[in-house]
Image (cartoon, rainbow over all chains, first blue to last red):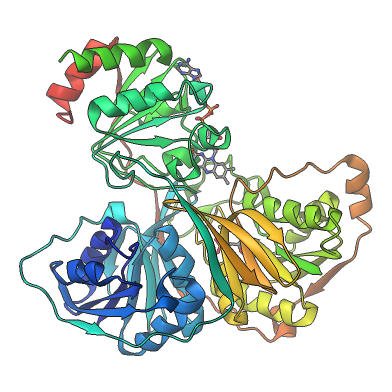
Length: 312
Length: 249
Ligand SMILES: Cc1cc2nc3c(=O)[nH]c(=O)nc-3n(C[C@H](O)[C@H](O)[C@H](O)COP(=O)(O)OP(=O)(O)OC[C@H]3O[C@@H](n4cnc5c(N)ncnc54)[C@H](O)[C@@H]3O)c2cc1C
Ligand SMILES: Nc1ncnc2c1ncn2[C@@H]1O[C@H](COP(=O)(O)O)[C@@H](O)[C@H]1O
């Protein structure tokens, strides 16, 4: 029984979500290999090789893998999968895009977004926006799984390195090609990996006002998140959205500002260690999920908070 | 070009579901049912492509219990031309849905299939990718922008780091994200007209597709409840709690 973990990376850095996936893989088997498919991605393979629990790294360094298009990577993994009992990836947009394509080639179900491993074939996963947790048992001989990173601790880096083996590139599919990418640049910690997340909602009113969230985040070294309403209204880019259909976060401290607490938003942050809400409506559902709430006008409270933190 | 839009009948997004008392399933017997919100977006996009003269016909397909026909009528009222229902009481998992869809694609030969990125009941986020795989077509998942050109479709996708634009060879599979468009509401005359639009019904056996579920649902539980929180009076009290009680800053 061995596991192949598909590394999530941008050709230069390994995504921390993959570290949690390696932890999950280690719970299934002592035999964990990691595939790094990309272009000029040696640095990623080198760091994957040092992760505790990794037995071998396979690197496929090729023009064809540069954009990591599912159409090209799925056949590559399909071929490799012959030797493995499990194929795992983090439930990032890359993993969600790729793994079902592999599962269909293998004619097996995919188990999405697992939060625990009960046995070699039984897993827990949230569904219905996390209102309920399912325990599911797979009857397939091979299991294709995406892992919710916040539910597993990150595997650590060690001094010893596992061997790295180069593998041949897949055939180019010609079904798709990358035209362009617009990536959000930020000096702040990455949303899904930050210790503190400050999220703003529709209550901020407009993009200009959203700057007070940035100011508060700066005081605390926090990442910034948002509700769907704030993203739809254009206050912040789409990749800030936290929730059922956005990002799942579980920081030490989550502060929701001007967010009502719809179930779709709670689905993305309710596993945070400590939750704070600032909302002028005492009946807002967010208060049912919070550890500490302040009822009041955010335009008064957030500046007070910034001042108190700056004077500390 | 014909567009196929798979639509799922799901528990309405406002309903907070619970496990049944024996914890073997989700209690949905009296729940309000609706079209999966992502599928409304897919239907809207297909209709807009028809209105723009790019698509010639919009066919919607829904698989599951008899009542899926109501969901199909909703899509026909929005402006889809024709419906296909595959009737079964068996729980359909994404791989089965993808196989049924492949059978429909083989019959209908659409130029595009536009699905929702995820069904809000199973939260699987698989079917579109699986269908693209079975067909060996290109896939544009989590789309927030679609531009059809002569031999290709250009899809802008919402990804973790921002957005990405791909060019896919047609025919192709696209899955919708929330910001692709805002779906219209059907008007009363359109709801009346929809009753007369064609709706075909099949059995999975007619399509020679094996829909045996591969995942067994062993148990359904509620997530751990959070301890009841407190309302603090002011910023000073909040900071005191965060520093000295929760110790998170
Ligand atoms: C299929 C589907 C998927 C979805 N996925 C997501 C998702 O992933 N993430 C997500 O967030 N949403 C998601 N949603 C949307 C969700 O249902 C809510 O509509 C959304 O979360 C609301 O955002 P909000 O709380 O910012 O806005 P609102 O609900 O409008 O709340 C604004 C809050 O701000 C407060 N407020 C206003 N002014 C002030 C002030 N001056 N001071 C203090 N408080 C103030 C108000 O009291 C109110 O509680 C989804 C919806 C659907 C249908
Ligand atoms: N039973 C079904 N009937 C029709 N379409 C479906 C069905 N199940 C899933 N789909 C389509 O597949 C998409 C993704 O579903 P899922 O992979 O289950 O999250 C949905 O948004 C629908 O477009």
